[in-house]
Every structure is written in C-alpha cells, then in structure tokens.
Length: 90
Image 1 (tube, rainbow, N blue to C red):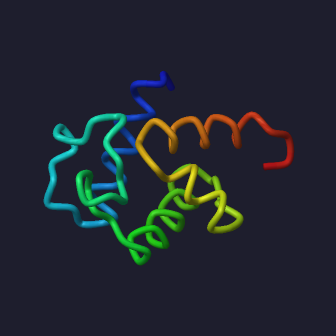
Image 2 (image 1 turned 180 degrees about the vertical axis):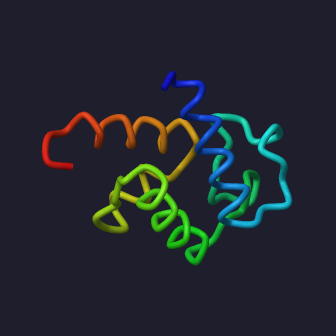
C-alpha cells in the first residue's frame, strides 16, 4: 500500500468510525484533528480513534503521551502506523 493509499484509508476510518460530518475529501493531511481550528475532536474521539486503529491497522497506542503526538494529524497517524508496522513484535 502506498503512502497516499494509507492516508486515504486513515481519512476513511476517521469519517466512518467517528461519524464525522466532514467528508474525507475536506480533511487535509496536516489538518489538526484535536484543535478548534481543525476537526475539533475530543478525548472520546481519541479513544474511538485508538480502537479503530487497532481494528483497522493492528496498531495500538500505549498511552496518552504517545497519542498526543501520534494522533495530531493524518500525517502523524500515517507515520506512527508505518513506524509500528516496521518494528518487530508489533
């Protein structure tokens, strides 16, 4: 899967699993997911996002410090998934 395909799959997961009103086509790769000038997601959305990532990509997020960095944008989610998939035993 290419980077762009993975980013599209992440956007699809966001829209579907978080029931966003924003279409995936309007979510840019560097749009802040948790700020008011971005998608404005909250802590409940973060929890759902972590569960969705585990189901969709087999990648877990161990704690809130990691989540804060990894779940900031589509790009950071993409990079986190790629990093986790490359690690042996993950």
